[in-house]
Image (cartoon, rainbow, N blue to C red; front, side, top):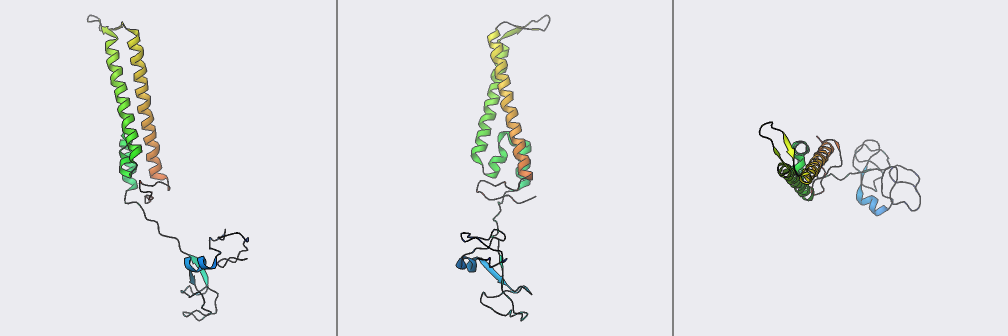
Length: 189
């Protein structure tokens, strides 16, 4: 069996030509393909032996028509800039319609802020400042250790959110596979 479009030999079980993508089923071929004259390019009916435009005896050539993509109305530039400047709180995710990711980033941002504020509170309660010298003396090492741990966790979460947002904004700018919440691809810049 041979491809009706490009003439390449096909295996018996192939439904589409691996070279040009033309369907091997005659009904599917007729319904999904447009026929054109191989000499002048004019439209032909599948059974035409002669081109009505140039008069040549021509075997119709099939051109597969790609379906037009429906692009997202969201701007790639706006999404990327929001991700770059406000990405750690998920603004670009809300803009592009990825609500769950945006909510996750807001929750993680709140957790990191709570950890840092709790660390500051524990640090203040872990000692005192000498009024004469201005030095801080630790009197409660347990509070100081907990404050250090909470501060480090808050900074780690905040840094992770920043890296996550930076990577997503770079992908929004350069990747061709970025889609909005409705699964529509973003237009290229």
